[in-house]
Image (cartoon, rainbow, N blue to C red; front, side, top):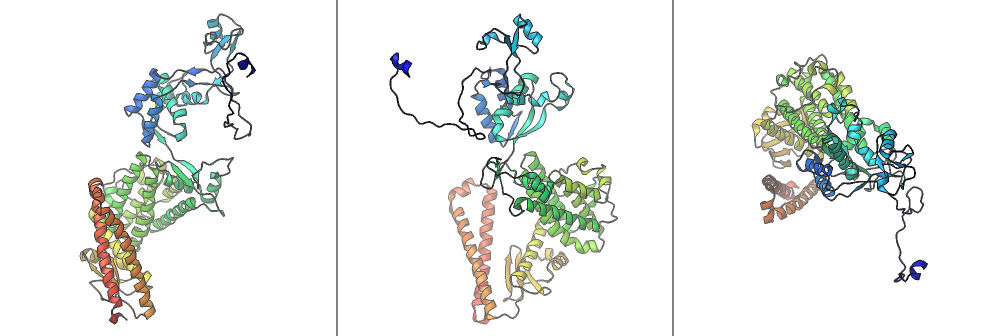
Length: 570
C-alpha cells in the first residue's frame, strides 16, 4: 500500500467483505498460494477431437442419455489440464533439469523415462527430477490399460481391451471418464469401453449425500448382518433407476424399511421353493432346455408361461438399458403375485392329484425364475437351484451362474392372458364382497358373466380359490353387488339389521364419491383438445376405456343404492 501511494498509483481504498474458505476436516483457513504447475495442452488436439468423435458417432454410449450432452459440452469447451500436484505420494513426474537451472523456466526441463536418459539429454550428471507428482486423475486415466500390462505386454490388453461397460458416478464424468477416453485414444488408439453407465447415488432420507463428518451414513455391513447380502442388493437394485437418486432411510429400532421389504421377498422365494420341491420330489424334467416339451393345456398353465415370457422380455430390456429398477420390479411382481399368489394357489388341486402337466409347468417356471433372479439375488438363487430336482442335468452345467440366461421364450398367449384376467377379476370380486360384508364362505356366488364359457371351464379353480359355489346367472336383485368388467358379481344377502343396512349404504356412498373424483380427473383430461392431439393413441384409448368403465360402475352402484333406500330394503 505504501509503495503504491509513493508511486502515485493508488486510486482509492474500499472495504471489501469476501468469503474466507475453511477446510472441512481441520477447520483451518485455506490460503491460496499461486505456484508454477505443469499443464497438458487440450483444446484442438487430436486426442480431444477423437474423444469427441467416438461419442458423437455412437461408438461410446452414455446412459442416461442426458450425460452425453454434458460430456460433449465440456469436451468442446475444454481447457488445458493442470497435471501436477504437490503431494507426498503418487506417480512422480518424469521431467528433469540440471541442478543449477532455474526451475521456473520451462526450457530448463526435459522429459525422460530414466535418470540416465535425462542425463544424456541434459548433457550433465548433476540433475534433479521434479518433486511434483501426477494429478490423481491423470494416473487414474491410465487405469483401463495400465492394469493390463501396458506398455510391457499386449496379451491381456488384446483380450480385455476395450471392455464393455464402465459404471461410475456422475460427479467424475469430467475428472475420470473423459480422461480415460482421451488417454485410451492417445496411447492405445482405441476407446476404453462401449457403454458408460452413470449409476444412481445413494442419499440419505433428506436427499443429502452420505458423509462421515455429517454422520448420516449407513453401514452396509450392519444391513447385511440384519437382512443378508441378497436383500440389500435387491433393495438397491429395485431403486437404481435412471432418475439418479436413491433416498435411503436410516436404520431405526433395528429396522430398515426398504431392505426389510427385500428380505421379505427373499423369504417368499425360499418358502415357495420349499413348496415346489415338496411337490416335485422324484420329478425328472425333460431334456436340456427343451422348454417346448412341457407346455400344458390348462388355461392357468398357458397363462403363467405367457407371463414368464413377458417378464423375461422386460428383464432383458431392463438389463440391456441399465434400468435395473424396471427389471427388479418385474421380477418381484411376477414371482410374488403371478407365480405364488395365483399359479401355485390355483394349481394346488392338480399337484395333489399328481397332474404331470402341472408339475412340468411348475418345474419349468420355477427354474427359469431362478435364472432371471440370479443376477440380483445370487446367493439365495444358487442355493435353491442346487436343490431343485434335475436342474443341473437340464441345464447341462453344475452351477446356476453357468446356466444360459433366459432370452426370448415362445410362450406368449394373449388369449390365455385375457381369459385368465377374467378369472382373476371375478375371483377377486367374490373375495372382496365376502370380506367387506363379513359373509361366511361356502354359500353361492352369482356371476352375470359377459363370457360364461370361460367361467364354466374354470369353475373348479374359482370355487377352490373363493370357497364359494359358482352360479352363472344374475342372482338375487337384493344381493351384495360388485360390478366388474366381465360381469356383475352378487352374493346373497343374509338377514340384516338396520345398522348393517346403513353401513352398506355408507360404503356405497363412499365408493360413489371416489368415482366422482376419478371421473372429474378423466373429464378434465378428455375435455382438453390438446390431450387427444398430443398424447399417444394408446394412452387416449386407455383413458376413454377407464372413463366408460367408471360410468358403468357408477350407474350400477347408484342403482344399488336406490334399492337399499327403497322401503322394501328396510
